[in-house]
Image (tube, rainbow, N blue to C red):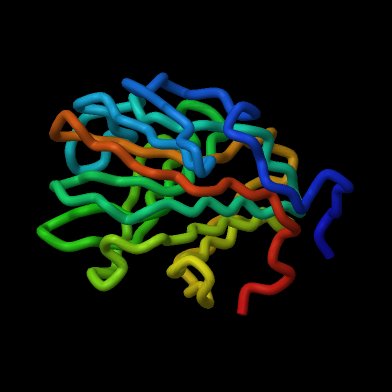
Length: 201
């Protein structure tokens, strides 16, 4: 049984979040979308394989309670190597999760990075999502995060389940990174807080 909160089930205004690292720009258009331009070399990674630690991601974070799910919808326009966007979940500098889309090895990939001192990474190709609105959903239920994703308005596929201590204060929200170039802009359409999924399957 998940813990329910009276404040769950609402659209979050962009103004409720705070950036981990301010982007080059973040502008709300007439339709309410937030258009964010990333700094060159922005990234989130700790040590594994590459040997470096980067904590320069642009993540717009707000409280993420047990019993809630965060949903972020954005347009999947990520044309260059390692362009990425999705949801970032922050516990502290050494423990965090990012999940969403990333351009890697010439393909658009759906994946997740789970970091507990060191980062791991898993991906699966979703080339047919390019140019479309995509929704990433992360539920926080009991001692786990459940990650799902899909084209906006369609059913979501399971991506990953990973443990998270229910006692850990946690924040989450939309993020983007541009590890290799200038000029990446991502259009975020919505940021929602809803009740968490009650089941994994």
